Amino acid sequence: MSERAVTFLHAYATLDGEVSERDQSGSASEREDVLLLRQALDGDRRAAAALVKRHQAVLLGWITQSVGNRETAKEILQDVFGTVFARGREFRGDASFKTWLFQIARRRCIDHSRRMRFRNHASLSSEPEPRAEAPQERAAEARRKMSRVRAALEALPVEQQEVFLLRHVSGLKIRQIAEVTGVNVNTVKSRLRYALESVQREMGEDQ
Image 1 (tube, rainbow, N blue to C red):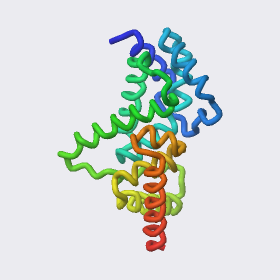
Image 2 (image 1 turned 90 degrees about the vertical axis):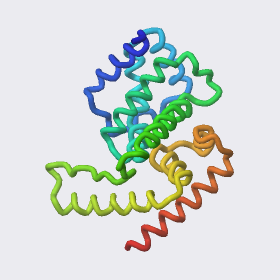
Image 3 (image 1 turned 180 degrees about the vertical axis):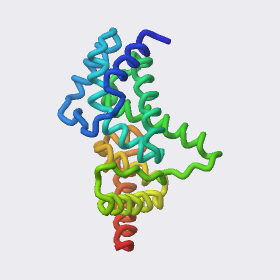
Image 4 (image 1 turned 135 degrees about the vertical axis):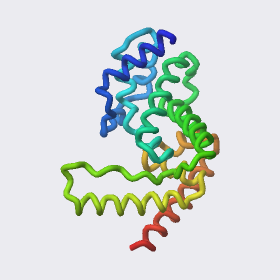
């Protein structure tokens, strides 16, 4: 295992084994991302941990929606950041660090989907367990709403589902989505429009 991979694993282990539910990267500049990456590649474990912490929440949310299982998403997330630190010297800055990160994550999700294609795996079908302290009624209503949202998303064509999640779950900009998916901006806008209309229609019919 390379020193960079070891650096990443140490950084990941310092995060208490659980992903923060609040994304801390919203106000971070792209320049700071690049600086942290360079410091991490030079062996700075604190910089590696900071870089992971800044992007992990939003990335985990998108991966979870993409593969339909949070535990699997955590494994993919770890693989993504492992790749970042193992191949970080390849980052040239042609796109933002966040865009590059999502490009790696997208490839990992595609690889996972291909592996699962030959298994009895239902994407976006797993239900989150309600927290023990939550009232049963509220937990049941949350499950119903989540099921409706997932059903609406699952009904979308794959390319529309992808851009919808990148935009509304991960908060990427239109330009970033175009860079991640490899299509032009107008195509992204079109797919988003059709996806939103379809989701709204599906949700409306279930009222």
